[in-house]
Amino acid sequence: MSSVIASTAIRGRFLDIQNTVAQAREIHDQVRYFEDGLLITQAGKIQWFGPWSDGQHHLPDQVEVQHYSDQLIVPGFIDTHVHYPQTEMMGAYGEQLLEWLDTYTFPTEIQFEDPAYAEQIAQFFVNELLKNGTTTALVFCTVHPQSVDALFQAAEQHQMRLIAGKVMMDRHAPEALCDTAESGYNDSKALIEKWHGKGRNLYAITPRFAPTSTPEQLARAGELKAEFPDVYVHTHLSENKNEIAWVNELFPEQKGYLDVYHHYGLTGSRSVFAHCVHLQDSEWDCMHATDSAIAFCPTSNLFLGSGLFPLKKTWEKQVKVGLGTDIGAGTSFNQLQTINEAYKVQQLQGEKLSAFEALYHATLGGAKALDLDGKLGNFNIGKEADFVVLDLKATALQALRQQRAKNLEDALFALMLMGDDRNIHATYVYGQCAYVKQN
Ligand code: GUN
Ligand code: ZN
View 1 (cartoon, rainbow, N blue to C red):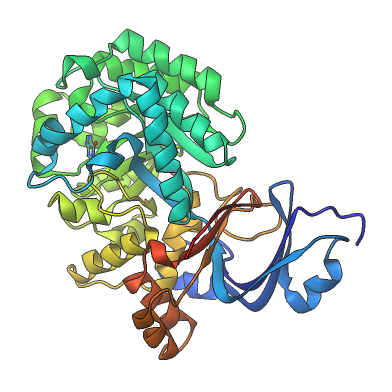
View 2 (view 1 turned 90 degrees about the vertical axis):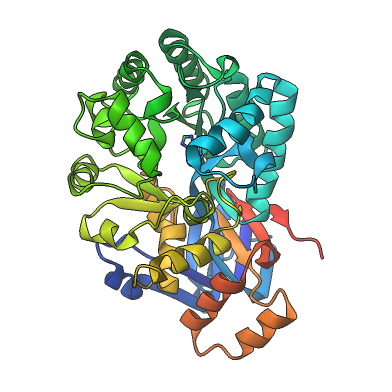
């Protein structure tokens, strides 16, 4: 097929989930695995995908085939909730949410007033994502517009699909981190016009959480969402019991925490709410009715002692969910580690999380939570070519365990429970290799 110009051809073992599903039990039937497969990309998109035996005849002229004979190739991981300015404050000791914000988080975020500082940390952050096989993330910046510029500029260098936004926060935080209802609206609007849809960048209106926004600011955020319906809304919801009690005090006229956001027009199919550990039944119903999504952040929920997220409820109530690292309350950038903790969070509630369900949440399910499953999440032809090359045997212990693996599912589960950034052999973004592990 000489008419086809491909930029990349990758041969190896491929694993993905072919379609989104309504129930966890349906995932097994959607698992697609080629022991010897071929992926051809062109201009960042997947042009051909299938078994090598068929695909070798489709190879465009002059394309060099990169053969990963030992590894496992899966779609790029999707992190549905992370704070890039908190990269440097991971592992801050001893506090739960509200005290942790005051003691560690706000002082850290003040530094992002300086664009050079923001640029330095944004570069570090993007490299860390790539090093961990994460190709798309929904990201909190700080209140400073320059923090958003720094992140999108860093992402653009790799043509990475990131969604991000400036924090809106006009009370209950240090003066240096506060905007106003008016400036928060104006700055966010200018950033939407500058970045949303530029290359692969997408913008998220980002009120930090209900306690740090006045009703006026939330109303302005809702106006902005109405003016730009295809931008995202990204915030926190029902993470910690003291936080929920505080919201009830601050907004007595609303029925509950989610109602505050719903009242101001901030729910919807491009709204992502981090945590949702303690939702009421009526709030689950509202999440479903508005097609809003949850970012489940297990390492953070355990680190801050926030609680155990009931993943099973997302299937029962038909609410979209993805995995989030929630750096810097989260304790790892790595989605294998995040799955490891997600599994234990389910065990503590008497539930299971299978390897294939975990893969779904980290890839196609995460894409669906971000309303990007038409573009990302698996190897379907036409999708954007973001993927990770995983080394299953990065240590002697892992090699021993993998030799005993009973089948693919067992091998994948062992990788998830024992794996970390050492297992990320290479990360491809938009058809191009953006990271290779150095031994
Ligand atoms: N709620 C409000 N702000 C934050 C934050 O920065 N991290 C977490 N985990 N929860 C929040
Ligand atoms: Zn967060």
